[in-house]
Length: 195
Image (cartoon, helix red, strand yellow):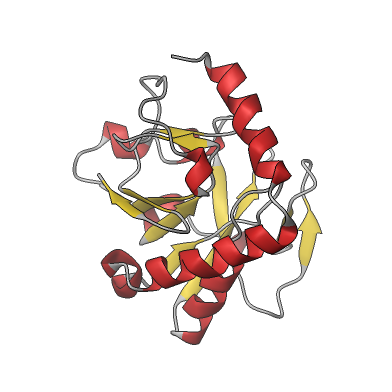
């Protein structure tokens, strides 16, 4: 099995090589699979992300959520990154600011933020995923720390975790760590994988 660092670099390079037109097409194809996904239809509070570095863009899906009367949220980095993420509601009027990684996030006051266990569903960015629902992220561990409660407390199952990816990010098996949060499903431009 390829080492995690090598695999991460390889897939990120492949993802960046996708043309803007191909990425846009994949996002619209993903929308078709995702909007019929039962957990999406039944969820009200849904976390999204801003696509960077060739990630599949959930923007069409976010627009669908707004049209359907759902409340979309975006992640916000906290000052103490060892704690994880908080989530802020998103609307078209939301003011955005760049975080320390240059990723847009809502510029909101603390009282509008919600805790991760208050969400119904989280669309998670990833570098790679495998046939067992394991996810390889960017390496910062933000999502794993944020949703660690899913591993620790059986009575707090928390939100449904759904990875979004291009088909090229799929691998049969990837290396995992004990703290990795497994995905409930992954949606790509051509498939819906359920674990």
